[in-house]
Image (cartoon, rainbow, N blue to C red):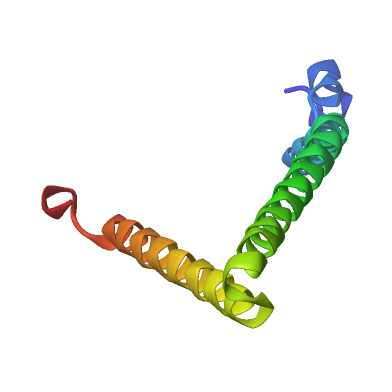
Length: 120
């Protein structure tokens, strides 16, 4: 019988502990590579998202300014007819009624999200 320590095939095959260590190292390297790839993709997407969000924000700000200007314009148009106080009160009341109606309709639509599909 031959000596197991002198067997050349025994030295070429790594043990279970070495294989598990290699598996852990490979898994760790793979996870790091995936995280680096995700970070790179997120950075690339952020380069598109940030300017887009900025443009949307500026668009919303301009739209709000136009709405304010429209209310001021309506008040100035009504002032010679009914006076400044009544003009301000009327435009503010109309704006609140419009806002309340839109809020109510939006809330009704939003509640439908939580209903089963058959009840929508």
